[in-house]
Length: 293
Image (spheres, one colour):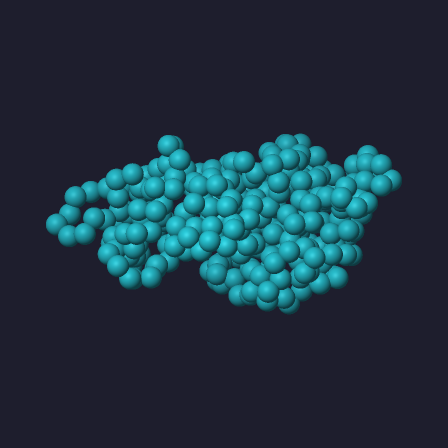
């Protein structure tokens, strides 16, 4: 059951950083989670269990998950909403005041913590294995109730660059020293190399040239892939499957594709981005450092 919001609570609230990231990334441009946004959030919390089991929208969710959404959205009354603020299309989770976690009111902190815990409880065992390092404790955002709250968001590990299919030509990416900001370049006698994110590892990752070319071609003039750029990239990677099937924009993509975009954009924190760097219109893939692999 969801907890009650109390203005005068004095307990320090701990919010898991991965939940905070998913909330910000799943919200719409107005900082609200309506039914379909809540589906994206729930699926993300389950590591994709729902889409893996052929559930692709809010209407497909089990009753337990829907009940959580209804219960959480009806807390709008505690924020001064009208009696019908959670009725029909009005139902939503409003996290617009979470743009800057450090400035959240205590009431908002408790609400966000409640969203995370209630959603997690409704998911239960319906989860796919996490791809995070199992030996690393799950990070939390500490939100103290008095004074200026302290927010500490630490990723579980540096983002992992996984091997792509090895069909066709590839660019070898071998780790060197830890970069200060983005990939660095350097001439070699062999394939072009750039350093990977995070600590050094004795691993060479090969990226198909066609993927690299599509990334560069799909990005905007600033080297960023926003939602519509990501659609172009995704459609290109599928050899036009999505446009052939009458999908012409990011909003038409299946939920699993949108979840991939949400997950990837929230790696902005590993590059020193702010807590809200993957929220709403801020969400983007920054490949500006790939102009010269």
